[in-house]
Image (cartoon, rainbow over all chains, first blue to last red):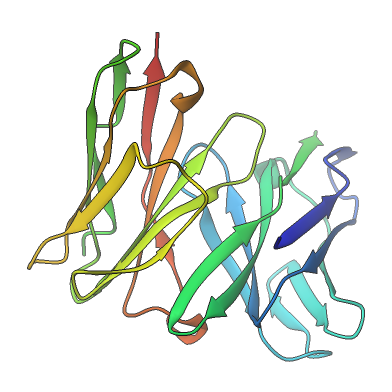
Length: 113
Length: 114
């Protein structure tokens, strides 16, 4: 059975701190790993990682994939209260021409002023 | 530029009833996927449709069914509702199945079964 595990499940930090969120996976026919931010309802896309060792950056957020260790990390530097959200890791895998996203439970990040 | 739209936003149903949820993908997107997100959990895959054909099905009972229309909008139907069906139902749209196209989520339908 395909599995995605995120850690920690929750995290409370102060504004300005740096956080690292972890994601590990066990899936068949891996295609890519995606990170989403979920504040109220709709998960919003952050990154898609396909190749190992190549860091993707967007402002204060960055992410990297390690296909040997079957894992990824999401870093957020200089956190702000607006970063408070659930961060979801998902793995896209395929079976023939069918694709599906398998999600982890998410990490609830709370950034206090 | 309209994103993924889902209706209704909230719904309350009684056990045993039937429900239909609707999703309109981003214009030009031909693939729609449905996910169920129970409180405190990540979304769980239910169905994927592409070009009006079912392309994948998750581990859900036959009470769950879906279809995609010629305009690429989609419906998710759930029969004989159980309390455990209470969840946020998310629709994701993409140009086609596959990693390179990305998946955009709608704001979801919050279903409460009482």
